[in-house]
Length: 436
Ligand code: NAD
Image (cartoon, rainbow, N blue to C red; front, side, top):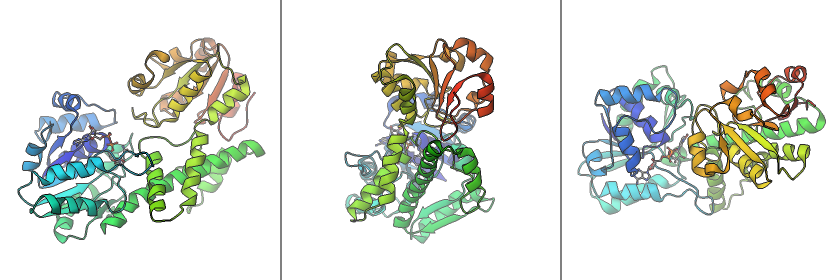
């Protein structure tokens, strides 16, 4: 099939590349000229495990191309995906201007039947708005399909190639047939393609992300309580996770959820509910708790050193909002850096992939180490914000020599408590006993 993907970010590029991998011809469109030029010369603009191999293979086999020219991209394509940003606007609602603007542009260009597929996360009613735009600007028949994306950055290729489910919101039989054929290679193991109406599909995505954000937040509160009552959150986590109704996944406490999706999607669902005069109380609490959880490590630092951190030097391991990505959008690390700087401290950071993006925000206000050991050199304390595998089993002999003091504030519970006692560290983690 011939496909256009409008918006070549984390979702669009993974979608385009993975659709090319099963033999489709995909043209990815973006308004960012730099990005398109990079991709045209074979440079992948994001870090995503497994993507590079597929990217090069499909480019070399002429199934994957990149352009800034929307008209040429959609001319030959039967299916047009939109993977455009839906950032929060001032009141937390999703900003639909990218989607609706692109819909208008596409409507002005098409000359035959197209399936318009929305992959962005959008509020209920967006498909209707997109349909209305096509009605207004063209007489050509189109079907508008809601196809929310559930991929996780860091394992995005795997998630796209073998999705737990594909959700398709459309009542058009013609579009259903085209989309079933397109997705058939990805669900060969028997995972379902779930057809539903557009509104249910749109809400499914928000419900999924809000549920996951709630699950994390619940565990973070349990962890906070563990610290107060002297319980161990790892034991509690295993104790509840072995109940199949709860499940083992997404129960690890930490320093709050971040990323480009959970914060904005929870906010957008609250706003959409408010618009229908529905007070979504649990999600409002989730937002409030998560905001305070983001600074829980700083609270611990202040309790230890006092409010004035001038003269103190901190190492920070982890910038990305989670491991295996270079994405730092809404990452807890950013809040930690800001807080440390505002209290007079100096900071050296290390992240396997996230440093370049962080430089764009903090520039030379902080130092960037080439590896985890360089980062801890001369540090009064080490803070950990992202659970990259490379941080899990470091050489503590080396670290102990390099650091000024043996002090760790661990926002991701990477280390064994007994080990930290043996090594003689002050070790303050989340929801576990304090080692001092
Ligand atoms: P992104 O910011 O990484 O990429 C969006 C791209 O769209 C950018 O490259 C931008 O230059 C381009 N763009 C903007 N306007 C354009 C236009 N008019 N024409 C062509 N290109 C244009 O965003 P993303 O993370 O890929 O997210 C896209 C959507 O998918 C959002 O709604 C997001 O909520 C949703 N989503 C994201 C993820 C994720 O993990 N990142 C997962 C599931 C769903």
